[in-house]
Length: 182
Image (cartoon, rainbow, N blue to C red):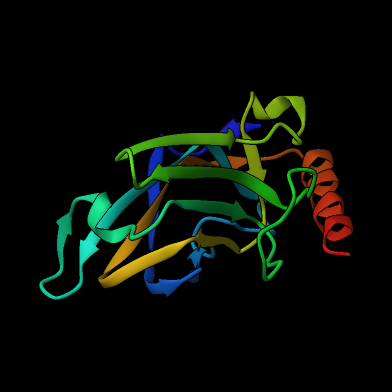
């Protein structure tokens, strides 16, 4: 494995709109970074999930207590395959996940990354996750009620670099990804 670039960040933001148990999904396009012919992929070094509240009447950041009208748990996941729903921790498509638990009555929160990043890749990944798919998928769900005129914003920040893989490593990751798709 040889690094082709220095570390850079990819970001995507999801908006969980007002109402009960809102869900949002989006993609991070990797088409400009992944090249099958050159055995080029993305090495994900780390993933951060940032949780904020937005006042949707003026688009400004507001306090989280205004957006959470009840106790809420916000789950966020980054996967390299589109599962269409939140996945369990043993799913090979899972790159990273995290959650925020907000206690409305005590105005306190706990933010935890529970898989950061995974360790399913080859030892040459040096503790990171190698992705050779052309997209990564971000999904977030709020279990609880988001107050009217607000939204919970979940931003995923992916610290990564472009790498070149040996033919054996590239083939192993491609086979693993194909098997995980089933």
